[in-house]
View 1: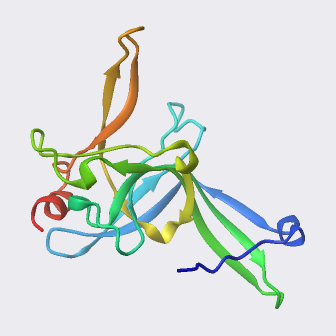
View 2 (view 1 turned 120 degrees about the vertical axis):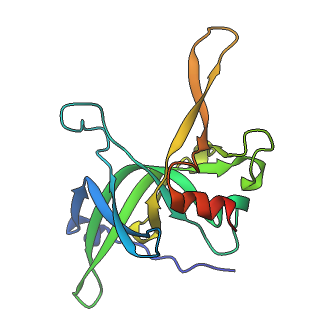
Amino acid sequence: MSRNKTYISDEQLHVMELCMYHGIMVQVEGLEREPISQICRCTGSQSWHGGDQWNDWVWVKQRPGRCYGALNGRLPWQLQRLFKIKLQNEDGAFVEYWLALALTTIPENSGNLDPVSKFVQVRKAQAAVALQVFSMGNIIGCVHVIPEIATSSKTGDGWNEGWIVNSHIDLATWNDVYNQ
């Protein structure tokens, strides 16, 4: 299986327009299957209203054929940047690409529920794919994750190795995970 690859020339890069954004609106289904808007925020390294940075976790639709157990073909990734690039094609027309950069995760236990906690767990992807750029169109909603804090036996310092996907935070996630 081959993928079409588009390469950007140096000339295109020099005239490329780049716009950064701090949030996007995503349509999700409500309780009665009515459309509801969610705002997914991402400030990158900038503070949010004088506080800490705010980089939401979002559901990202994965390639067809990747189910990941209870996750139903999606993974929770943490937004790092939201941006639009405008490139000029060979015909002289401008084409816009709405893109996101995110910290990626991979599912534990193939994305199936943990037998004890009954939650899905994910961990940070390996360094080679820890950050990915993808189309904003693959963001299908916000997700709530709970950090798992491990303690090093040598230093006693807590460090984040993985997350628990909180499927009890909203009814849509509950239905997706438990009512398949």
